[in-house]
Amino acid sequence: MKFIDEAKIEVLAGNGGDGSASFRREKFIPKGGPDGGDGGRGGSVIVVADRNINTLVEFRFKRIFKAQKGENGRGAQCYGKGGDDLIVRVPVGTVFTDINSGEVVADLAADGQKICLAKGGKGGLGNQHFKSSTNRAPRQHTLGEPGEEWELALELKVLADVGLLGMPNAGKSTFIRAVSAARPKVADYPFTTLAPNLGVVRVDSERSFVIADIPGLIEGAAEGAGLGHQFLRHLQRTRVLLHLVDISPRWEEGDPVYEARAIVEELRKYDQALFDKTRWLVLNKIDMVDEAERKAVVDQFVKDYDWHGPVFAISALDGTGCSTLTYAIMEYLATQDAVVLEDDPEVDYPTVDLPAADQAS
Image 1 (cartoon, rainbow, N blue to C red):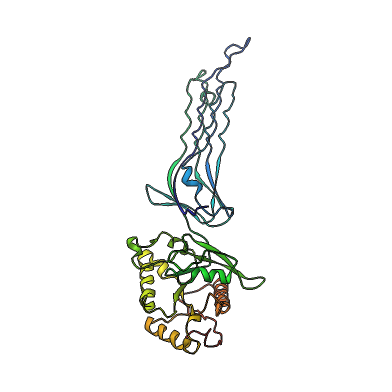
Image 2 (cartoon, helix red, strand yellow):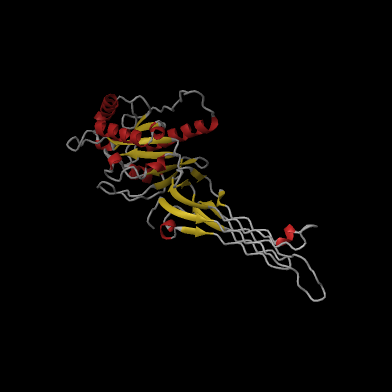
């Protein structure tokens, strides 16, 4: 199934039914009086987040969602039947935005969360409501109210604790295969990953976190180069970003320090809040560096890049350093869950003594 994370739809709640202007007419009952019933309420459009759905592809084929209209009232004080509500199921993480105003209407971030997008109109009143001592035969009745209508843009933002950021072929898909049961496509050409992939990393029997792999970002993405920024929204809900950098000897193809800075600049252009998010540096493909030179290569990169945050050197291919990284992530997430952070606190990242192949700065 093709991964679709954007769509535009129109939702229309049902109109309320009209009230009835009717009079009782039965044999031997003269002057029976008004007996017009009320119209039924219109059905509402309700959206429900469903974890069993992971794409918006269905909304590419069906764009109009209309709830049922309420029935009109009838004589003998018969009330019209209310219209049935329309239930629309969407993936968890779907954001609804009003196209005309740009206002966020709903953000379904939890499985089972339910929100009424468009409320059905009220039914009209029958003429029985207008009778009085001075108006014995009222012919007034009211029409049903129209239901709400919205033109909405749908945007899916996957829910994950950790997001992977990096150039194409930095090894993001290989890393997520190494630490989780996810099996994204891996190949030796750019843009192998064309859609976000989610993997559950189980650190032990009781602790796990979700990691998101998105297509690689390249310099000039803001101007439409590569796959552009279209998938960066999937990193907005993450709590920590792993910036994967290919540290293997490939000087003839480019400068890894320059590429790392270019990716971060594209991140800043896209969203300042995403740029400010906690970010760790992960130097991948360390297995392609001579073992005796690994620490020196890592230290030189950190110095040239002028990086002062957490650094990990790994090989997603053979698993070197991956367990250390996943345990550090789990400890960081546990710290975030347990402590209410105040005024830019200093986070104590776990430190582990490793051989030169695993240890970074």
